Length: 207
Picture: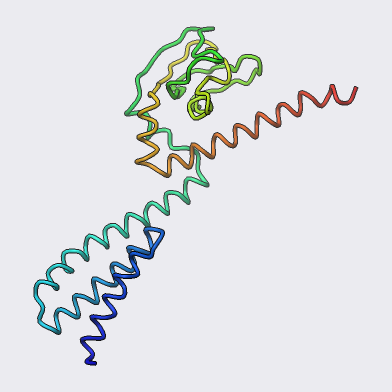
């Protein structure tokens, strides 16, 4: 078997391996290596169509590989940083609320996600005050019942933006880093609520 044939078989073996990959990053790495071997094989063997094909596929696979690496970096960063709320703003409709106005009531259908642009709101029955940059309504939006889990009221004048559920789902599909960050925020809020509940129950347990 000649050396050029070994290159061809190696390139073909890498193509076969791409069909065995379960994640995209290894797939792109192997596909890129396969393109390089096929280009070398076609150059030595004088197979112009194969060489042209893989010269065209090579930059595509390299670009997709770069995208996968960038996404991995964004996902890692989202674990350390706060949710990038600027991603939501272009999709939002702005509303203004006066002091005491209810943004939504517990038990209502959760059909939108809200972001506090200016001012503060209070969680009725809990007393927690939430300010600028806070995302509201994510718990009900993703719950199985699709209902609001608390009543939120304005403290003074409040400006808030909202986006509907369909747009939120689209952002989740297009921006996995944002989806991960928002999921982390939801889990953190659940943990905070549990801690607050323990503190409320502690005095009664000591009686």
